[in-house]
Image 1 (tube, rainbow, N blue to C red):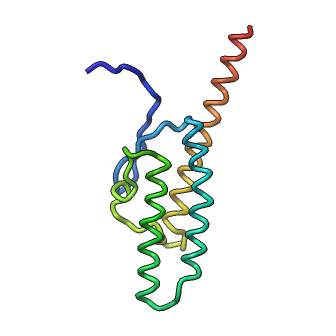
Image 2: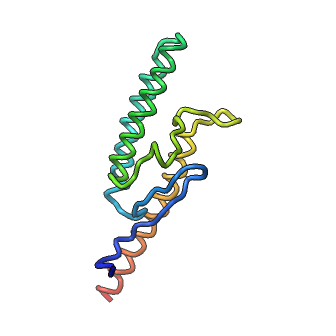
Image 3: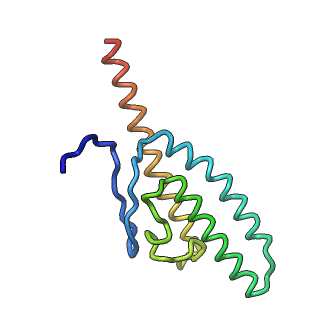
Length: 133
């Protein structure tokens, strides 16, 4: 099959999980990612305020994980399933240093999107120079 148009989608593998596909230089994606930060911070606050009872805490962690993944699916598009890509691991799980998977994931995504935004800005600036030559 012939490609009609290359839209700049790149693939990013998550070790032990699956693959995410998105265009790292898409300004709309970057804007959605920044807006999602507010929603996710609100979820974190609700989680922090959850009771300390074991069952209540587990239920809150499960709900927070599900909702954060729903937000990320909305940001990165229907072709991406963060639950599957992360191998079903809860985003609130922590590594040996006490850093949550969510923090590590957001840091990695932010880095990729920031680099993509820089590439986009550079290409636009170069285009302006050529066009106004």
